Amino acid sequence: EVQLVESGGGLVQPGGSLRLSCAASGFTVSSNYMSWVRQAPGKGLEWVSVIYSGGSTYYADSVKGRFTISRDNSKNTLYLQMNSLRAEDTAVYYCARVGDIVARDAFDIWGQGTMVTVSS
Amino acid sequence: QSALTQPPSASGSPGQSVTISCTGTSSDVGGYNYVSWYQQHPGKAPKLMIYEVSKRPSGVPDRFSGSKSGNTASLTVSGLQAEDEADYYCSSYAGSNNFPSYVFGTGTKVTVL
Image (cartoon, rainbow over all chains, first blue to last red; front, side, top):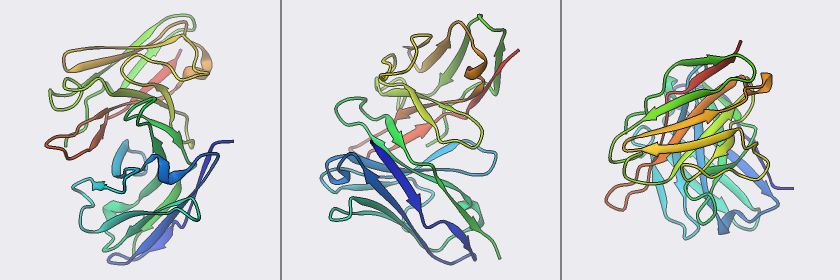
């Protein structure tokens, strides 16, 4: 079964750091485009970052310089390292697979999400 | 990158049709045929309903259809059913100068009366 399972969310103080993980099953993370999307409480979806199969990484302006997307091929897992966290980073963070040939540039598989709360 | 504009709400009776618009610019919706639509029920993850403007993933009912004209994309749900009541979001590739990015719509809450 194709599945994504996020973990690592929690409560962190402003200025702190957190690393989110997204374990994939049923497909290979390194062979696909993978992304992080977040949703603040009661708000809409916001694209955060993408890593292409070749390893190139891209970020939304709102997180550039603070967040880093990466992957561990041996663990088939995607990560999001979040530093210098702000209150406005509070959201449910979803990892998602991005189609590159079929369903190009669509988020076709989603995890269940992990909540990140930035508060003192 | 600004969010794509969607109406906050839409509604229809069971069996009727509802159409949701998604307005962007020539740098996103108008510039690429990579518009997708997502359904999200409360407390759940989004689900892909339409990709590449008008294509349906396997398992999505043909009651869901998509189209695009200029800078505006649309999602139509025909034959509304109770389970279609959810939030719907559009998304578009918005890359420029070889710098990939993606943008989502503001979201539309669909109510089945």
